[in-house]
Image (cartoon, rainbow, N blue to C red; front, side):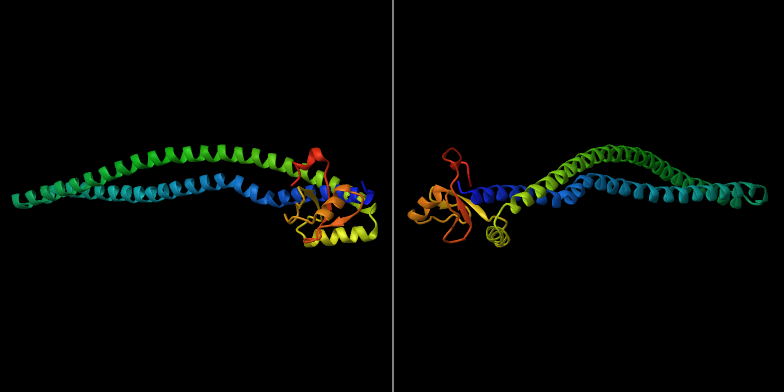
Length: 242
């Protein structure tokens, strides 16, 4: 095989692997964000329940104050009994006390309902807090895994960059310039395989004579249509190359 062509094939392979790693590295913040999503959702669910509990507690305190004022009013009504002079005044007074006690009873019932509801909400708050802790633990583990993967990719990217530079230095200036131009204008693919007489870069069939020349791998030849550098992989690999 032509030496410069062999270097170009290796360089394309190295740069393609670098491109794959670069794309994965760009996805890292999105993966971390996705891993954090369940924790954010759990916090939002807790905030919703906590808001309901806070509103209920305010309502309960208001009812407790209302109950206290009604009890004080009933006590004051009872102390007035000695000042009553007629039976009519006394009956009216008893009715007023009974009405006040009924109203107090209504407030007490509502207060009990609020207390029961508060207890249920407090239980839900504890459940949501436990859920947050569990999801945060899962998030931290996933983030650590992603970070380890990122570190490994960083090291591999550095290794591939060094290998790419070494290979590029072995190319003639003209071949290097051609490779870089094609890579920049052909979506990162400057060198493509020939398969069944078809350029795997643009998927178009080539003329028989050009196909025959490319299969020799003796010269650097380009696709008639996309101008990518073409090579013929060994027969055992040709069916795998795309």
